[in-house]
Image 1 (cartoon, rainbow over the protein chains, first blue to last red):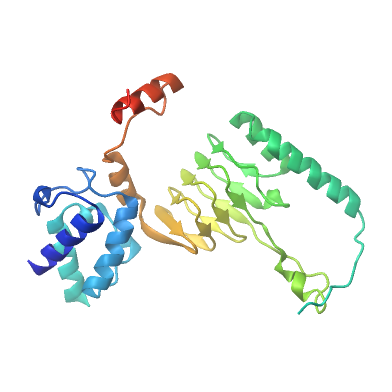
Image 2 (image 1 turned 180 degrees about the horizontal axis):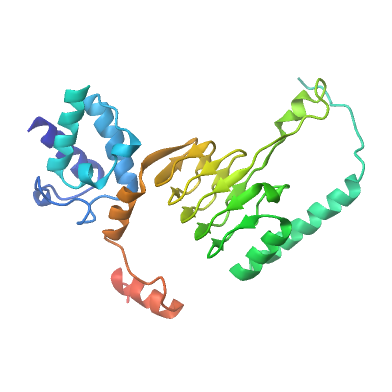
Length: 81
Length: 192
């Protein structure tokens, strides 16, 4: 839940999206919520906030398509660290 | 520091200068010519260019034959290809004839944004996107999106594709006429 809240806060702050419209399973890519520069900022944010290293090969739609997918990705990176 | 390098009069310097001037003048004219004319002239200069390319720059350094571009590549205006490292200038005292060169190879199906700088020795794989004003050197793997100075891979092309296909301002006007494009864009942004 903490990871989810942190990511939601970032999306609302940086991507200027409406918090009420952000559900865990909403497809961030299909809604056009985030663009390529947004992804670059999000990756930098994930790395600094959760002390993980995101490889460029991991920046793929499966990991970034929803808040739930992002949370799962961060949790997996933390487990594997 | 502050030392003036020894003056050396290279043979053919005047004709080289005239040639550079003529090329610079032609470059200015080529900006206003069609893509086909531009590519024909660049090929005549030695740039190896594949099929179905769109090239808006004429800046291919003084040794353009060191540049190879694959098929279906788009290169935006302001982008420069450097095939020659001139920094040996400051070592002229110990190595008077030093020159360093590098080939540049671009794979198939790539897009290079405006005002990029591609350094000698760079190899860009296929299906790559180079973001505007990137400064690129080294090897860029296939299917990469690259941005920054120095440029680095920020995501796979599959990710960029998903972002672009779902972009909130996507308007499918690539192959319509200019007037129809303007009308569609004005309508999309509520400016009609």
